[in-house]
Image (cartoon, rainbow, N blue to C red; front, side, top):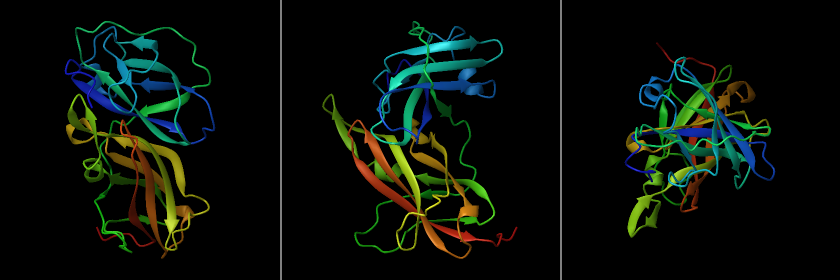
Length: 260
């Protein structure tokens, strides 16, 4: 769901709530000069910056352009009091590109803010496209691989699953957005790998139609055993429908590099 046609652009913000236990948290997002798409389309005073919750239309209670330097292309945006439903990687939306907007920036002091990040790059490795699987299917239909001496992102494309999840709004069916994901690595007995082999660096990445349906998960192969078969799995929650689903891709750990 899109905030309004008046805003031309949006990008997902990934928020690390992996250490969350209770209560609301403030969030801080830092933007730099490397993001041309943002700085070339934003108003010079940042008046058209908007941030919504995961559903794409509900504005956050308060945002503050704590620092804003249009000439040097740098900004720090604080967001007040967001409460996830669980310890997870959560998503918000950053909108910009509306020259008629008026500012909504309101000063407040962020208390111990957690980090929000905007992913600027496309997936840097193979993307595993997750689709519907037959009930009782014992094998994953998609697969990724990682070396036991490397740490790198693996990417799961959940677009096909999200297409099946719709919410009625204004009499129309609209697709749900990803809201929260909890990632883990499991072994071939479906047991969670004790060292988890995961970093807190989970990114929501924009794709076609403005949806953030690709999830990038940083997996540490040094915590896995060469020759063993694993699966990388996410338990995902959507908004506004509040649906929950589990998606996974086989993950093979090998110490042999593919031929050039």
